Image 1 (cartoon, rainbow, N blue to C red):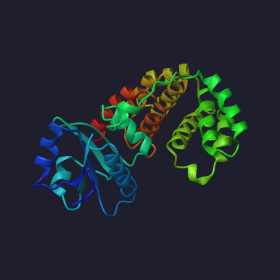
Image 2: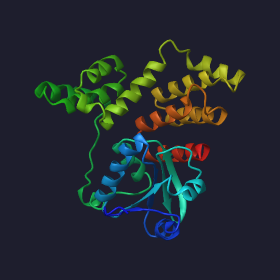
Image 3: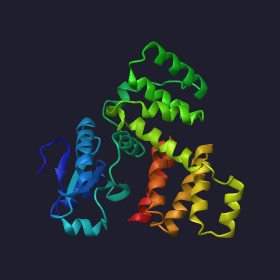
Image 4: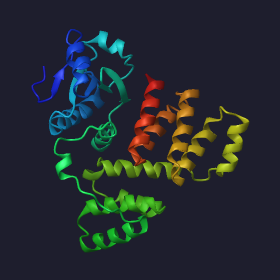
Length: 284
């Protein structure tokens, strides 16, 4: 059994009391893992860290799928790690695979789960428009060129203004310790979408292709990428979700990968949460 605050090992005998009934009082995150699973060793410590930091705002139930096969079967676990959020005795959302810390925080926030101290420390900031943000960050980088974090902020700002080549050069030049930073992961995802549109047909041509053949998943994917880059996040997610419905195995799971990358770059938490649930309902 775990001795960490707000973290416990769930078993077949205790699951109803410690997870289902407890979720009537506080959200419970259920982490399905295995000792042989590499990504589990990355995700598990992050979840445990957040459970401690959030100080009881949610509980973390750990389920070893090899030891607790009955629970894994009930949740139809097909791969690990897999995480579900249980509230009010019901599964309300979930995701497969290991997410970075920032995305985990966004996932929790989308369901109203915030650290206990968040209400005391939150402050409102008026965001700059993208061009002004780029200009301000260029000045900051010039004033402090050794502060690599500022360059990463500049990368994200440049991507919002469509300056992908410069953003990619800056991203490639960052030190290795920033490669797994949540912002770097988000930037790579944005660059991946931009790269996918190189030599791609125009949206009208892609719409015609999809109208002629609803199973043209390549056209659907590119149409979704066009929408995402243009700022129409929901239209993009709809295309990727339709791909998942029609053929989840297409091009080594391109639909699922596109959805996950889109979740990383879309800043509308409510929309991301909505489509995470839709994706989970298809995968599980």
